[in-house]
Image (cartoon, rainbow, N blue to C red; front, side):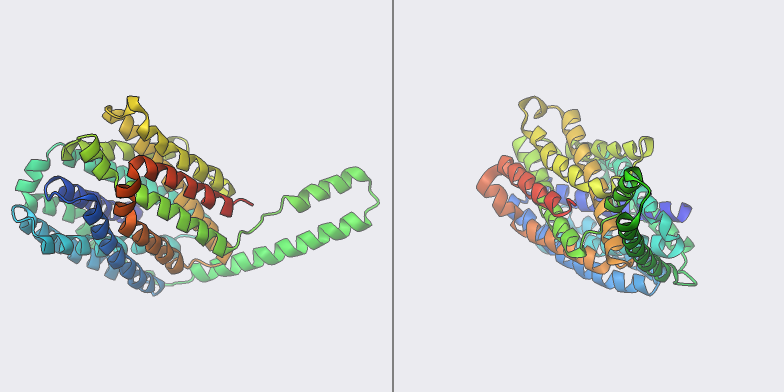
Length: 400
């Protein structure tokens, strides 16, 4: 569990740097909506390439190498950040986005590989939820700490860098590659056998219904067994739902710093505090853990409706309410993401994440690239309505 926590914290640091870079670009560099969308689109391209390479390394069990790459690229990011303050150079800012994107990609693929290789498949869903909870709570604490002293951090970049580099370096020191890479193969065999068992069981139930003379009660029981067997959603439908999920999510959240800064007038410290408080909502997963399973479509419908609270007049000037709304969004995103990924590998019959991750990030890239244009054309209220409709489409795709 210690290793899982260190990997989750490494991913949390990468995610915080993602948010931190956006806020620095908007608050200090004066970046607008369209430019912010293009910068994030570039980071998505790099992130997708990193995911592809990281997934290939993960398939070979090269977890330690991925953490080393995360450490090196994060070190470069901090050097670039120190150079950016005061100069606000476009080239340096672009390089910062590239650096943290590579770190983020390797951090994510390494932790997925660790779960798939070091734990039995029966624990994967539970561990994926735990990973997400640890990551987001770590993000919350980091964001809250950063929000209390943004100016001090920017005037002491290397001290800030050293503090954040320490857990990543510790992870590199203690992580090890799997000696036997058999858990994915066992999972593939397990799913195949389970499907064969379901087919045989269904056929036996049908045969019993047709030949039984034990009365209607027995037949009703068998009918119930027949129609409550697990139904597999095709991987293509799950990927289509993932595309809806990631697209709607990206157009809403990428432009949120612009909305908070220019429409609500929040300073950089206030925005970071909102993001930090919002992530604390994931404590709900520790207090009331549960599986959403095939009911993910209901969560997607609810997730589409939550952002409408942003436009309620009473919430516009209350930071705590904005934090709660954003927290609910993050909480639902976490549950949906884990559910879709678990449904995908179960439907596919093997723990292969490359296609899922790349499809999701390609969608995020497309949405990010045009998010600034969409925001400029239909305003943030229009973005909220558009994202809700897309979420409803995604929910229909995974509705059995």
